[in-house]
Length: 132
Image (cartoon, rainbow, N blue to C red; front, top):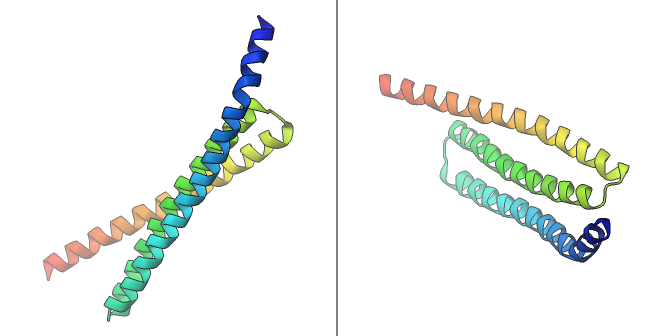
């Protein structure tokens, strides 16, 4: 029975390697796509806002938007690392995975907080504008 498990894993290893490469590539695509969209929005914002305060507010939104793509890219990388750690568990892989998870958690916490603050500020600005 143990030989059957080793045989199945041996046959599945190339598939897992392809999945890991695909996830790493997908992570890069997500990150680059987010940078392209954020760059386009930034250029469009800079050309259309005469008011620098409004442009700065919109730039904060763009920064948070880009941060969401960075987080998604990190999530995909973590998935690839988890799969790699399962099929080829070395202590270096497990330590790298732990470090990535800690970094992602810290980034996620602060980005979520910034997005929430930005939404709260936007709601406050809308209320002030309605009261005028």
